[in-house]
Length: 350
Image (cartoon, rainbow, N blue to C red):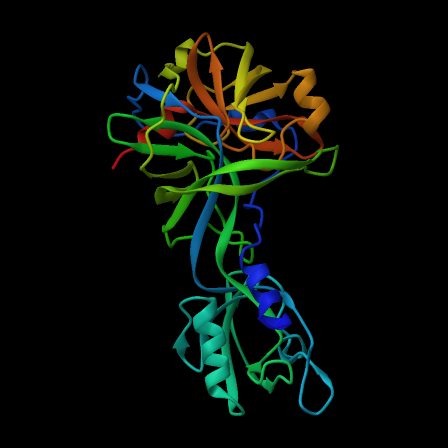
């Protein structure tokens, strides 16, 4: 395999972090008047999560990851894609009016066009654009290239919140997965989840978000059928032996004070960590129903607080599931927001 193809293959399997929304510490959100949908999910028993999972979502096109110069037969270095004005995170949707299905399809289209002019249609920040460029034949592999790295979809690390054993469905994240280029929810609700192992941590600090670094360590364990502002949901394939069965609390049972989150920050080990519930809005139907604070010294010393990859970490109080972490407050990573478990359970159905 030549060097150029190795670069493409390497980048196709890279994990890019799922999109998060960060907010300042604002209690007014919890005092707003939200219209509440009739939620009847409390008292339901589910399997407690806390496992790190790898998540992949398909896109209608290929996402530009970066650019790479390559040697042409003229002895010069070329990168037509960068020279055309394309940018990282642009979503290429068609080549000469041919819809792009995946990265392999895209590179084959480019090579087959050869020396003819290429018309690329792409999306950036929710707007559609079109550009013209020409590929160059590479002296490295004899194929036509435009000098970019691309991948089929978006993927990253999150936390499994719970599994509904009655219909073998799952809930995770507590917020939706968004398109990096537009910030909007990915509307093509097709994707998969995998068990993941945490290999490293970038610690969060005031003004800088941290991140869990992990790798996929299983075959597909579920497929994503819903991606909305309250999380991702779908069918779960695996059977969890020795899993903890837990009841979902009613909102009236949730109290200001001590609770625990379940998450994984090393390998595949799920552990409980101490937190405080600081504010609650019982009438909310949003992904910011509660304000929480991390108080566990071990978790703070290792992660700095809430970091990317911990979204979906289930919150337990008085042996009942009350919610899941959804957001971190960027100026104070020890604090963040959480969604009620009954909201997630209402979407966790076939």
